[in-house]
Image (cartoon, rainbow, N blue to C red; front, side):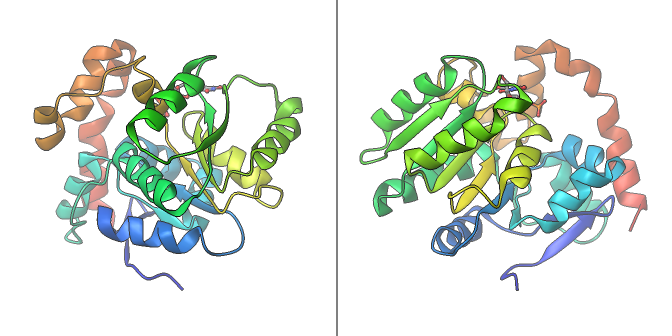
Length: 242
Ligand code: UDP
């Protein structure tokens, strides 16, 4: 039983949770048995999920699907079933880390290029007093090393796992090892370790406040430009498809 409502965009589940609600749910999840997967899709990921049955199913079965992207907010409005606010995955995860610090919940950072997770851990522990990032590992391991990665996460004693392998790799990793993982909650955080480590800069507040963070990312990582033409089509399809 979920304590929040969902909408469907391109027939993919997106939860109508505000940041406060999402954090309340996180606090509940870390007290429950089993590993709850939190997904933070943007328009691009919802679009990919609508064409990829495995990803769509993972999102369907996730503990929570946070609306990370202004494209989803517009799509929900055009559809007549509005999502109240965009909840950036990076903001949710950072606030969840603050809860972990207060409640003594250990954290593991998995993903990004060698050195990035460690630097992100050092920076974020300096920013959030009391936070324990108990372990980290880069995201460039072979499929045959996955059991060893799971063992490292479990040995760290982490109950909150932040996975930065890009979508859908990060969600597939969690689902494939859900039964072995001792963490109570896991979230796919995309490029957040790159930002927390200082490898990439987040958009200035003006861009964030005006729903233009995607534009700033295009400027920083121009290879993303090739994905841009898909966005207007996403909005049209999302508005038409009920
Ligand atoms: N990444 C990784 N292992 C991989 C592929 C990607 O650790 O095999 C990391 C990459 O270094 C970066 C993040 O995943 O830190 C990519 O996140 P982003 O959200 O930018 O990717 P997207 O989902 O948009 O492709």
